[in-house]
Length: 392
Image (cartoon, rainbow, N blue to C red; front, side):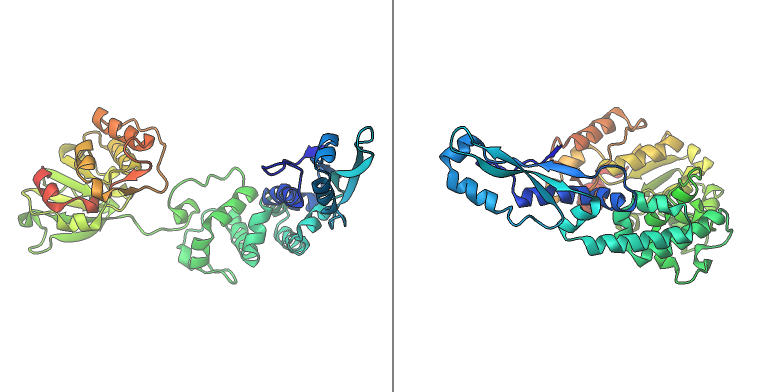
């Protein structure tokens, strides 16, 4: 028998609201919808009620009677079992003790969600009609199916096409399916991938570039450069330019130092410096630098945000180029800018193995919230006079 915890407060008897909360949990987990489509033997379901004891009947009879009255008439979708209490003390009192749901549809009716359940059944049938394998997806993700509705059917058509065409060899923009456009695919990437994984469970879906991991052609990675020494510009006056990652890897620019930053404003504001090249890569976008073997002979500085992801990016970059040195990512800089501390919404808990002891200490403090929970100091908020005084 499944019990239902009562809400806090005396006398703690199970209310209709408590029962509804228990059933809502079953709905929110997808269990009820799965049971309506493919019963797994969970029903009939009996949920025990916490009811007045003989002592409570004797001391608070009126309140106990009011509680019992809330179960009359019996709520829609269920039946009640009763127990006799107080026969040897106050006199026999017949109280509801168990709520019984004969089937999943009855518990859905108790919640008033029968229309939604019927809509799920219709959508599940239509998804399975596209490909019978997707019936398993519908049962695993019933609330996702309800949430996306008709869009789930469109996503299913895309997933079926992707499963049948693992290497389309064209740009995603060229995908021509009825009712499907590039923006739809971009908006429903997770949904489509979930369906593809059901259709092709052995197919790897790794990689951050969505188009590439599905075999589409993708625009090449690009690297933006600023020659902080104007004399080194390839063409007079052409100090700010952008090249593909592949071109950058074979560029072999004759400089002594490279400063990489993930903030565009800081990239543009870096002052002139002899034989120095500035490189911009947004967030984790340093793919172009990883393959550039010529960087091994050049001093490489990395300036990122003072947050857990900033150190994660540094760690990834250093895994390719161990000599990379961080700047303005130390405890002194962090503590000197308390007025600009912000919050990192989703800190990473990754174990980083390419940090120096000092960097590891700051990273550990950020993870532990030693100064402030989920602390983040964005690099563009550093005082520029402070930056200029500490740029190498």
